[in-house]
Image 1 (cartoon, one colour):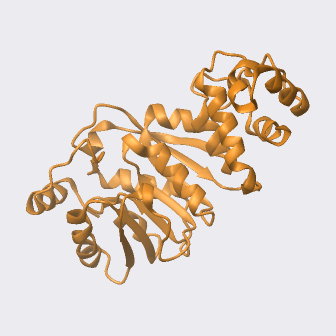
Image 2: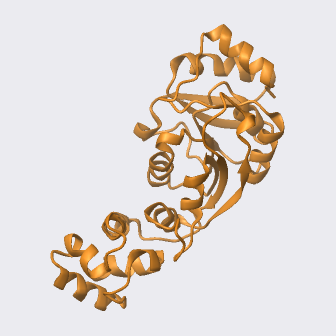
Length: 272
């Protein structure tokens, strides 16, 4: 496991200066790594994909539980050092490295069964949803994100944090908060708090409906204070047509998006 001093020495040797543009905040506390991996509930035969391994702290923690994993890294300097770090600290373990922008990845060496990552804050939700869409083999995951985002992902209908990210993750399955993470365990120290979100993909959905369901969700929360009759006017073609769809779906036209669960939005998509 990499400690704080080794991480800083490694970064200095590589000429790495963590940047906000890439959302680079490296975890320097081994106890937090153990906690993240434990919360991910990994089996020894899981094929884990990690997004943004950075200097490899979390990578080594994951490899303490599994023999093989996939790491997706956009920074070529960090990517070039990762395998050497694994060889040095986790001999006998295997990492397939994919040098790419995570938002553009459509193929991996093996179908992943789990996703574990300290996601870049500026693209955390789009990256998570992209991987769940493109890699249906993912059964579960544990992500560390900005606390505000974590609460949105795990929010339930009626709460102030509830919105499009909550519903889109609910399309795939269940999500829950898995704890908070102190700012002090990062280098550099971020200006925001972080939290963990655990999710599974246990929902059995008709993936051919996803695009229409997500379109309805986006429209409903574009102006979240509007009633669905008004908010879904663009989705349906007019307020009157939106009302017809809502009634057919068994949803009150006077309801607001924040009151509905994923099943109601599926019903709306099917009624279109």
